Image 1 (cartoon, rainbow, N blue to C red):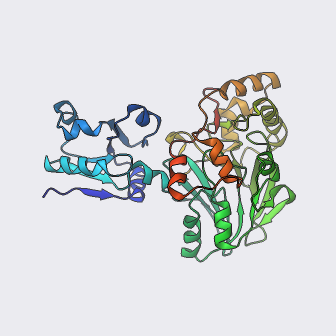
Image 2: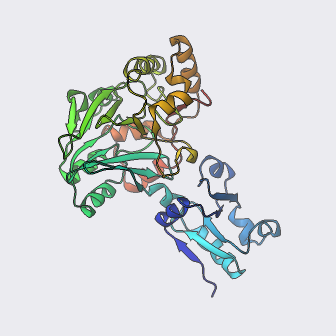
Image 3: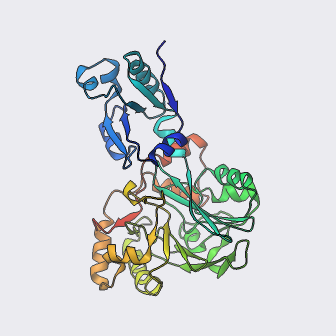
Length: 383
């Protein structure tokens, strides 16, 4: 019987972190689904072949498949890809099936060390299938989790594996494109969960939380590791950024490598765009260029640097993004409001309702609600 390889999402992520070319075919049937959301990276050579073409052995499909390379096969949930990989193997191709398909890829969080010295370590968890980022701030055996994604077990397991105690759990705002793991992680570990009361009350939420705006700083491990809380409204009225050890700026959805957080997901685009402008000209203006900005999202694999990190200094972002430089208010508002007319995150109203405690769903529905890319940014390239 013909054999083929099976690859877990973590193994594929490791391959994407190398210079080795990866030939990958997506065999989902709907071209729009594939166009909207598929696996991309700088070393991926991507093709879309509906499974029917390969299972029916259409000559035009097989003509484009290399015999001397591994062919990575991806489908929606890892069912059709098994049939395609078997057929490829029977015909002598080196087939590699992604176990669980795009659904499993969407649920994988890839940890990368963004910084480490004798007193401080910052780990960036990259949800590669969705462009969502979260962080562990670690010092002296203690850990603070910032913008935890839905799978609370990932952070709890990481802490246990490394002998760490989770002391604080922070959401920089109420998220609209993914379900937060903050409340679940708090229940799992007993650590307090912080988020802005402005965001919770805006959506008439009923969750249990510590009002983030009532704290000036939070401490993790070594007393020198200080997390300064900086209100940066605009994406949401309670958006908050964290200044870690005066060197790292965890910007939530306020500042991205490619743009700014969009202010229209609460139905208050004009008012929140004004807040965003005030944040840029008052809160961000005096921050030094050398701060390393670590955001909560990214929109394209090109934002991942050579070290596998999504981040850039504030000076680099100011040079690349004119929305972060001096601009008159009317021009800024016009550009941001125009960009806010783009496609909104799928299911964002339900996701917000879940994140503020107004709606409960089971695991499978949660997975389906989150499927697809994030759409939380106003991009400087298209604004």
